[in-house]
Amino acid sequence: MRALDHAIEMLYHPGSSETPHRMLSLSTTHELFHLLPESKANPEDVDLRQRLQVVAFGTLFSTSFGGGLGLSHSMGNPPHEWN
Image (tube, rainbow, N blue to C red; front, side, top):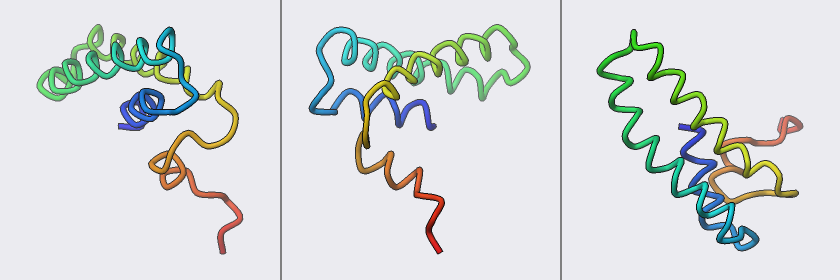
C-alpha cells in the first residue's frame, strides 16, 4: 500500500512533470490495481511477486523530490522526535 501511496502523491504533486513523473505514476498505479488482487489470490506465485516488486520500485521515483510529497506521506511517515 505504501507503493500506491507514493504513486498517487506523485500524480498530484504540484512539482511533478507530465513526463516522467505523472506518466510513471499512472503506469504503476494501473499495475498495482491489477497485480495486488492477483497476488492475494495466488500468494505462492513468485513471478507475480517479482512483478509487484519492480512496480513498487517504480513508485520510488517520488523520493527524488525534496521536502514533503503530500499529506498522506506526511501522516504515514511522522518525525521520529515525537514524544
